Image (cartoon, rainbow, N blue to C red; front, top):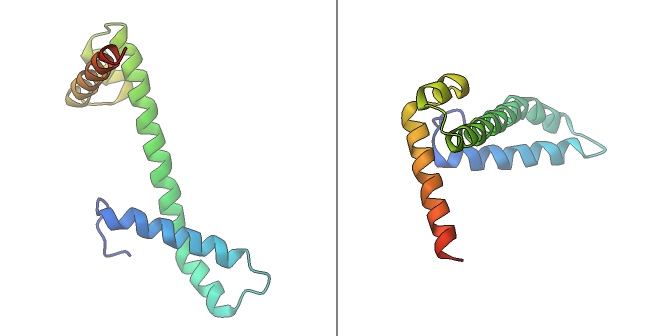
Length: 108
């Protein structure tokens, strides 16, 4: 698991499976010594998964705030400074938002 790079597609799936295993092992009434050792080894991976989820949530929050600011026509430089998103990310977000709005109009 530690050999997989951060962005590798199998890493997230592996973290999810290992987290489920950890929870399952911890829920047992009689935890065997080897299971207890495994739980201890899985704990840092579980914490990594939680940290990654928190970071993803923060990124989504920044994007929601940026979208609201873009709708208010606030300059990109100001939005970038406040949300800590790059100008490129904001431009991408704006173009996706415009594309999404256009497709919603077409569907009505």
